[in-house]
Amino acid sequence: MNYKNILDNWVNEAISDWLDKRGETPLHPSVQPLINKLRHPSLDSNHFGNAWHCIEPIEKLYDQIHKENNKTSARMFLECGVAAYRMGDAHAAISFLTRSVSSFTEDHDKGVACWLLGCVYWYVNNPISALAFWEDGFRHFKEQSAKSGRGSTLEHWYVSKIQEMES
Image (cartoon, rainbow, N blue to C red; front, side, top):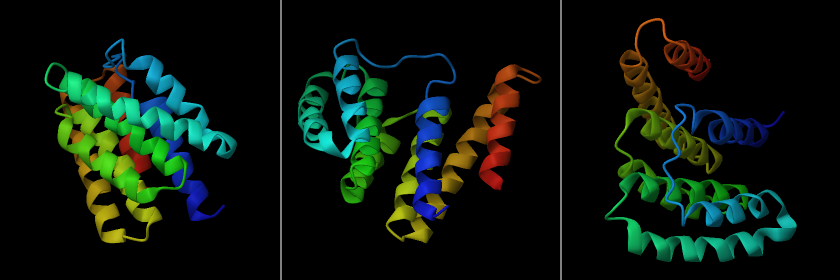
């Protein structure tokens, strides 16, 4: 397995398993349909054009809602960043994910965004930035683990993910 496949696996796991682990759905109802339209085409190279057309309205919607819901705004950027990465535009992915990292306020969300940004930096052969963001993601997960409550299912999940991150 080459390193791109490994990074793709990390990105897919972070999006499918980590992002909504705490059961929260931070997306504004008007954003969810756009995100759904973005996710599927970004996985199929025959539909990349459709995915890029979804990013533009998401950015416009950000201008309207970012003051009322910072978590939705951060999630919008994260989803656009992952889609851009999947479509091969690492520089756009870095831009979107950087905005996501700076917008999230909770450790769990910020940890996921940092981990994803680290994956993209590794992909563009910038190991210093990749390691720095992976370390930040690791730190945010450790902090969230400590807040989860001793012996809780969520704490065990964080401990498991932290061990994966360390390996």
